[in-house]
Length: 273
Image 1 (cartoon, rainbow, N blue to C red):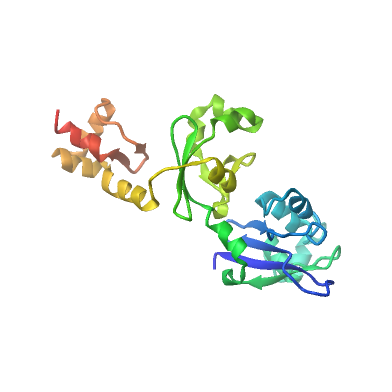
Image 2 (spheres, rainbow, N blue to C red):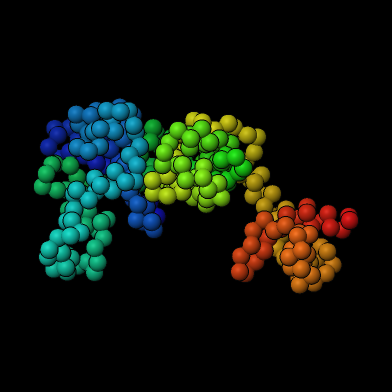
């Protein structure tokens, strides 16, 4: 399983209940914490309570990791090497250290209980529906965002960038905008650690477009071709295709050391001229 799920509970409470949920993405080594819709700030673990007070239900990866780090041996511990060897660990691993005591620490009575996705309440599962499935940068600081519930939205972020100092570099270097990537788990998009936009914001500000992920995939499969396929359509050699490209007669949509991709429609138009 690539995502591990844990309920956060208070061992000192008379009635045991899930106060929050810790999600861990193994490949990326990334933590996220989800709070219940009715999270009580007085019951919510310290550090996470501020999110509950603000009505924020998803704790971003930065603060989720900070919460985890507060419960384990710090990476700068003087005798860290010996501690790791004593616990059978070859290297410092936040998740493995967290699991040694099932999330317990000396400062409080909170601990972790392993769950499977089917154990999560409907309100938490429903949040997964609006996580991002894919993202495509468009012109004019717009993103075409594919969400897991099948919704596709065009999100205009220019105003947000103008109002937020951290994004000023994107306004000065628009070519950098195309480097957008998805956050682990589809929790949003980012350009840099300080330049992130959450999935909930994108879902809120985006305007729905009549397109599905299936439509987009079909377009790529049917209408994007490589240099060899272009040569076949033009009944010429691959070398001739590359020469047309150098002369500006063909315009690749993506170029790498191993391959060059073209829109099939543009290649076909060469036969019409």
